Length: 489
Ligand SMILES: *Cc1c(COP(=O)(O)O)cnc(C)c1O
Image (cartoon, rainbow, N blue to C red):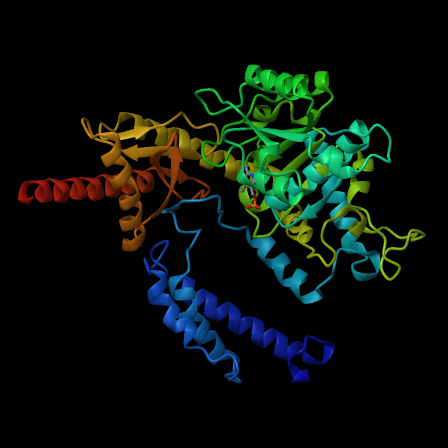
């Protein structure tokens, strides 16, 4: 099977194989007519289960044909204009070309001797991103697998920082300090903050929820009160996690006011910009991130609002010394005496993909302004879609969008809340089953709502209107069914 390894001796095999893979993909995608087949797990499972993994097909074309039935036929297509569910984006072609290079060269970004120039490219992009944020001359950071990992690493650094601050001296056991640490984030903060707190051994009660205003932004007065309460109870505020673009509402917490409070209280400020980070490239809306430059650490997901393939994310820090909290030395890899640049010293991962090359090739081919314009387009669409929703008598919209999400529900006049709670998730299920569109669901104050996340610049206002018409149609049908059932009862 050596002829299947990528080497200088197999370049023809490689080219033919990649071309066949690309052809299979394009043949398929060319026929895709909607975001989803509508398949349910029990319909797909038999095809996956039927594959005998111990009996290889021995032929790439046959294996590709099988992948078509086990995967592509029922894949969810983010490039389809009526995929409107989560923070998934259509991806830029230069980034896909970079994927070919990234996977084929297979550099590992932990050390210079496994990546060489890759390390320098990632470092340039970290510097470039930190500069766009405005973190200052001592900034640094590292690429990660996603916002969840970026948030975890940021909080790990904040924990190290708080320990050094709070420990009377360095002989104080970490556990004594850790049990008193608190992380403050808004009610609408991402669940990965909770997860990180658990992983870091802080305990489930360590995350203090700060109330939000009607726009779902953290209330600075509530933050101030919680900081005082935490302090008053003899606890240690370890970090405030402000969100620049909440997952449901795209709300941006008031960063300048939060930064002021963090400064007064000497608390680490982490800005979770997993979603809103795309504003760094926007020529028209960069101002929405004002205050982010005062953060101690920042999460940016390139695989959301920068139109990059999964995965591509980064965690940035104001003070590069903070990264020492993830530095461990191994004799075989990065001994203390290492003279060469090592990204592993800054990362929770060891072997790590060269995801940075995707962003690099994107910036070098089309540039940041073009990426920012794509994000601006979907934010414009969200604003126009808001008007549609606001004017629809039987649909209710939660708040005016900041970024590109719309939380709404089907609720004609007189429909009581419990029935709306039953009907809306069912609308979502039926819509997905039909394959005509995919929307998301969420809960607001305990009630069931639907959500559109607009990240596809090819989605038009007509697409949004058509999906809303489907929502209404399914909702009306469900209510008719309910009425018939009540009458026959
Ligand atoms: C998506 C998201 C995350 C998690 O990022 P992943 O890349 O999915 O791990 C964290 N915070 C916010 C606000 C997000 O929207």
